[in-house]
Length: 53
Image (cartoon, rainbow, N blue to C red; front, side, top):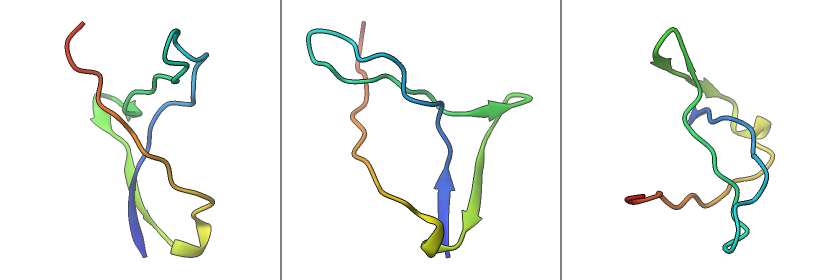
């Protein structure tokens, strides 16, 4: 089993880095996460925080 935190779908890449922005998925102000079977995981991805503006 694995705990997964859900994020919004990928948006259009932001230039000049050509990286997509995502944010935590939430419902009624609560972050979405759940325990799933490892066999359900299609792939992983690396996420880099956006610091400052």
